Length: 110
Length: 250
Image (cartoon, rainbow over all chains, first blue to last red; front, side, top):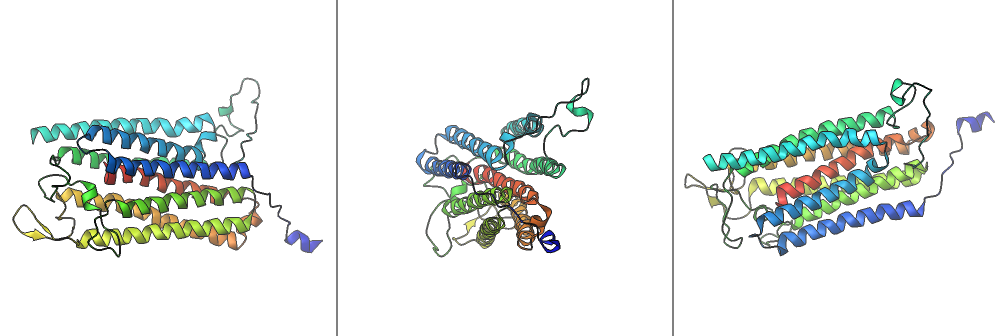
């Protein structure tokens, strides 16, 4: 018995097919969105500049949501943890908007 | 990652913030990893926001894509800069190579999440398998980036004339053949800082793999370290999603 105490029996649980399938579904979504980004990069004319930029930004946010929500599991964490991570990033987004507009103003006065 | 959460009822007159329970329902290590990643996100945001500021402060190229020529007078179209693929010198394949890199990193994120899933089932063999795939994906990405940097630095096309009339090939931190000096500067700093994260991630992944093989986590009774390093690895993938959009696509 002393020997079996040194080598505790590890119970390996069988994989849950539904969960594995769900993870591959998320992977497929990420792959498809990336493919659409390529389609937009070469399909949408460069003259539609703003349309291109906003499409890319939108698809990036969707991809980020899937990575953070599903792969990093944040979607299933306690609400207070979700908000602790997301609220600071809202200020970062505002900072990005402010500085890009600042840059445009610099371009005008140069 | 089981979806069961223990419902703790605080004593009368006390909230879950008065101690004794974990209000966020995660372990200390995982919570600190989350807050580290938040601070790391600030660092990457600072780099990308500065890039946005400087890029929008530069003149944009207004002509047609077909007629595009490199010049330090305006910001280059990224797909005209990143259009080379290893072993296919002279082939114009815009963004194909960086697309492959993106795919490799996303796949390594998938194998990582499968390693985490296997760890929660105490399935050592499966953790070993998926960690090896993840390490392989990270190493592949780093190799691709090494080639991309070498290509960017040396330049493979005919160098274009820069402002003072001379011809210059490739790029360094002072000047480059593609556009304004800041363009190469941001390329080196943003993809370099991300690449360094990938490099650290591969080292951490190897450490986790080593500990799994030697049975450290099996003796410990849980594979939470795989989950923590997994968070870091997914974050590296997340940052690449943003770098890919703002540096290569927009």
